[in-house]
Image 1 (tube, rainbow, N blue to C red):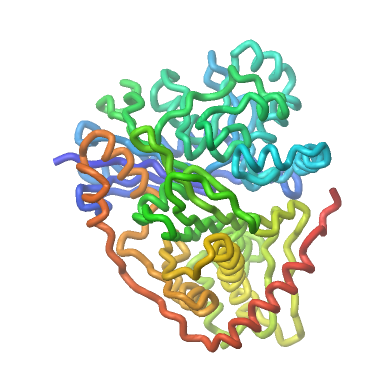
Image 2: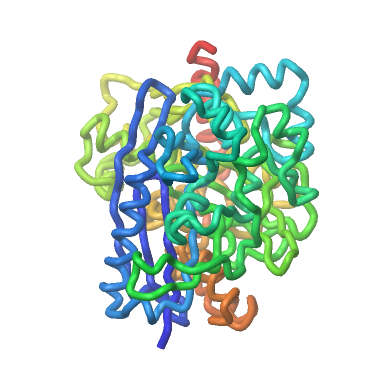
Length: 496
């Protein structure tokens, strides 16, 4: 009996999961790693710590599954996207901490490009907005601020990658420098229509082509793990950015199907088929996956702080000891008591795109309790998701039939019910909630014949619970109006 190993490298932890043929988790391991905040709005990771933690949980998950590396048919990789690593090709050492997707340090560079009239060029070619969220301006910053980096990059001595590239480089002992099309589409450097790195965009951001990885399909055999890492050389056969992997894991493969992932941030994706759809409502157009040489696309809305807001309650305010306690604390009050939290700790994502917004807690009175703040924190996740769905329905021209959900926060029944109440449509939680890792596993398994085709994996998806709207629509509209007022007050707070 053989298995598929999924490496799920996220923003706050590295995880590894062993799946069997039915998509059941047979082994699991997770390890958190350091979050580095050099200054307000700046977020970094130690890339070597990420690699060490990912390798550690890989070995642990295989052992917990009671199998050996020789029993693993293939490895699939899914990763936090846009986080930017540059390393020396000779030593394999990063030249600087990884700059995380949440980081805002290049807001000024984005403003300058916009002022120079380049926004439409980036939008048309990449499907993205000019925002420090994406990798391209982060890469340019590293080349300009690390002494000697630009000279070495132009000489072909440095390698750039998002976390998928960094993991594959290390897993293969430096043999492969690659990224898949879904991750490439998040860099501001990739032409999603041509499927290639775009010379004009590289020139605008002063990026030497020699630093870039090869772009590959999301499901194909890329290589094998280095002999020294595991007890066998295991095929590496699937790569997708975490949100695209979740879309695949949720079996949202027909145009109009939508999923939302509740993690550090919230990410809603709608499958749009084999042609890119450019949003008229500040959503992103992105590559969903590339399989068998055919590219599939999605519309995406990105929320920067979802689970991160709960972590702030735990680590910043200390009002809860574990993230799971937030539901219990929120349940001590019947409603939010007029309190609204806008968790714009690192700016606002879609559909607002304001890197200068900052967090705001509004509506506080002497009667406000920790319960109200906990409830406002949970509700902020649902409110931000409602903003995304409103934009997505406007682009699609049709109301959503159902929302498939995944991620850690979907275990919170209070949040899921409130989400259904706000949206006015069913929220469907799957039986297997590890859909991001499962999507990476499916991509790898398809490449090596572990699963025959997409129809076979399509039969594996099952709903665990459906949350149906129960709130009066007038009440829901009132809550959303107040939320919009709160968002407007958070905008433009930080000085450019």
